[in-house]
Amino acid sequence: MERRDLLIIGGGPAGAATAIRAARGGATVRLFEKGEKGRDKVCGDGLTPRAVAALDELDVDLTDAHRIAGLRMIAGRTQRELPWPDNGRFAPHGAVWPRRRLDERLISLAGEAGAELEFNADAVPILDNGRVVGVEANGRRWRSDLVVVATGAPGNVARMLGAERDPDEPFGLAIRTYAASPRHADTHLEACLTLRDEHGTPVPGYGWMFPAGDGTVNIGVGALSTMKGFKKLNLNKLQASYRSLVEESWGLGPDLERPRAWRLPMSTLKRHGPGWVAIGDAAGLVNPMNGEGIDYGLESGMLAADLFLSDPGTTPDTYDRLIGQRFDSFLRTGRRFSFLIGHPWILRSGLRLAVGTQGIANITLQVMGNLVDDQTPGAAGRVLRIADKTLAVADPILRRTRAAA
Image 1 (cartoon, rainbow, N blue to C red):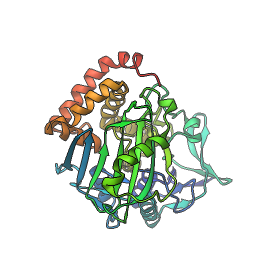
Image 2: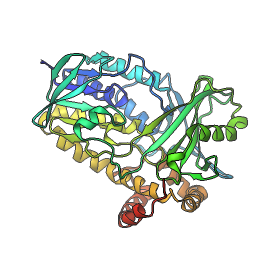
Image 3: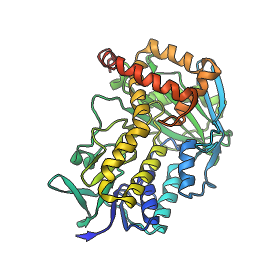
């Protein structure tokens, strides 16, 4: 087998960030991407201030992205337009950057940093007595000190490593397309928190309008698996229903492509093991409250690379511990909260509360912007810690009384 210091399966933002960081640090890196070079990943295209900060840390030029100043939240007749907080931890602005362009920029930087890139490579880990020792792709085998799994939603690689989604935890589905709009240069993301399916059932999720600044907007909807009737939910009808709400105010033209759907993993049974770590979506690092995970993917990828450069032998265990400290409390709370809002009457009351006052709306903004973690100061941090403890006690009841899917 040929040898490289680090092997990465997956060339999305998480995998590319790992490759950039590790190659710049002097490691020999090979990245395997299942798709073709320049492939388009279905996504909402929104970048939170947290994601912008991570891209800045990677020295990514965001000139091509459309700058976003804040979030417009809509719940029924209530509307609040809030700026992203400038708290010194993250960027004071977000962005919208279609994934084809974002991914192309990141993978190009990985190549410029010295990482070897192999496309059309359906790579799988090589196991030796339960330890991952390398990767096999396109009839060739590679050995390394660490394999990074950046494969997105669970698939064959996850099944091999026991890193599949936890079947007892919620997940999400989303669908999006693009349309021309005279408001394509709007400086706010728009999220409608009050969605209903074709039967009038409240949907725990939201509809979004993300202005891309290029003459188009990304329009889509997402829903959590905790809602009543989820298995019968028709995403195309939900998308059409939401489009009818915003078509006039945004001056939407016809859809520019067929709406495309995707699954949002929000948990994993394992995110590390001997010789490997999972990052980004493959590690279940997706915010249950908004379906966003690009920022977590970038951060987890950079962390994995930094730990590898420091001490390859201890990377898997140290990575799992540090990721747990940073994100587990918030993501666990979000998953438990999703069981609550799966009940229509709780969802309606919760949405009124979420945007009812300026103070609570500011906390909602931080939750929707992925700006909450173990280091969050102020009211949002206190609310997270209280919610984590309270929902931990209520968790058995929440699961027994979850809405019938």
